[in-house]
Image (cartoon, rainbow over the protein chains, first blue to last red):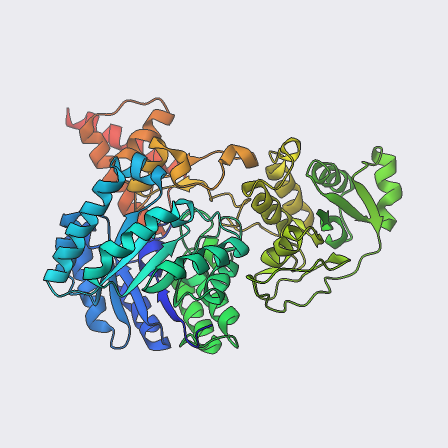
Length: 271
Length: 265
């Protein structure tokens, strides 16, 4: 097992999309600042494609943070990547639906079109000199052979890491371990794990992913997120403590959570 | 593989008998062995006949420490009932691991008394196809939740996995669109599987699709202009309230929008 794992906090992206969550620009800047201070390595700050106001906020977040890298989330759409340039991010994240279900029903494309579009998006970002990371959306329900095909394709774009997303939260820890272990066999890039809590297993799955060799893990503060939420930031830090260094101490994580409670309604505060 | 549910053992003493018996009966609908404190056996017998999948026990608190498991290693079965407590938030995962090794675990509904949550463990087994098909009717869960809340005086968090009241609420424009096209894209199991319903809520993340769907729900026709007006209002209110709007609030907004329109003409 590695001796260090990085936390990618997505409170401001995946968290902010959930029903009943709404942050003002000031709040988003404050949240980014406390995350930056406590030692989180990457802050996923938002979705530039949402428009000029969002882009301005992300740019301000970028200016406010001195330590953490700022990542922005993009759909597999060329125009989204162009919008990202307005934010001057450290990392451009491109989310690629990889399960046949998502490719067929959400993108209405086929596998080859997905690969071609990814090449176009990655090429554009790299041309402008931005590091990219690739997200495998709905990876837990995807065909592994198809995931392997991406590795060759991504060679020339040198992604900083690959996100393995259990988008609908169906994995168990044993499955997570097995899938990440297998992915490591054919993926030459650092692996990031993104878990959801539909079965109450998000943090346990995150732990299993780290045990199998994941180098980055996604969290949201208080576990906010769609449906039953994401892997809880404080719980994740607690679980990793003593096992591996994640750059954030339990004491700092508790402080972050306490401040964050001011920005959400009761239904999340007491959950 | 066996789950023992000990919810009834951790309820406050001053319970209302009819609620207690109701919860006992409802829990017995789940594919678990329902454990109840020995001292309530007479009471349950008097109320109804005892169910074959229940038994009296002498209550003990959870005893298994949460030593952090290595999930890649093969698990040896414990040889007794594993009863993990949830200090690190992974009791469910520890219980599941024991069950996957064909072991036995003790859990409580809603994770009562710092234990693994029965409903989470059951749904994980269900999603993995580990439960016999005839035992997978979980539509009783909302009823259990209601009785559980009345008996414990606790509130189940709205985002609690499997039983939270808001887990099937969708608000953001993309998700509403996706869910309508193909629910499987965003849900690990259907709301109906656990006796709930998907609901579209409106708030700061809503788009035109959400408003149109909500209007369809009430069989109300609106012009595109009105939908625009409603959407702006809903987004602003959602941001101000930091939650989605209740159905009542939405209908009030709709009424006001109608009034505004008619005063123009």
